[in-house]
Image (cartoon, rainbow, N blue to C red):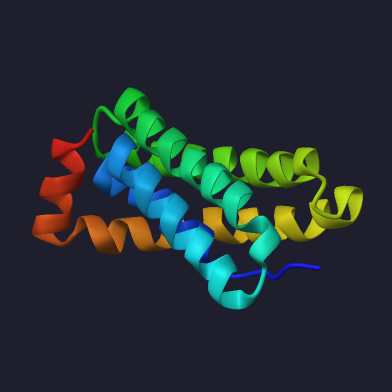
Length: 137
């Protein structure tokens, strides 16, 4: 069955702030641990890969698109779009409920996109977070 949570926003923002490598690890490990602790043992490996890739893509989009403050915000939104595609598509390909899992994964992805777009300006206003994000972009 699975569950819906706001963790996708953190996965997106981990890539944005930490960069591709650390973002991949933070997004992948954190999300895999959530599955492990939640009793969804069978999904731990694929969650690590999918959520790590979401963070990686978010970081790369932030680097490529984010040339100024407005385009960096756009890059965060594009990271949310990548999240929707990778999560819904990744779990579908993995066979996690097949078509039945797609609507919940789409809702989770849209929630992650919205929440990351809301949290990004708040986080980037923190000087140390901004400095880290810009250093990794």
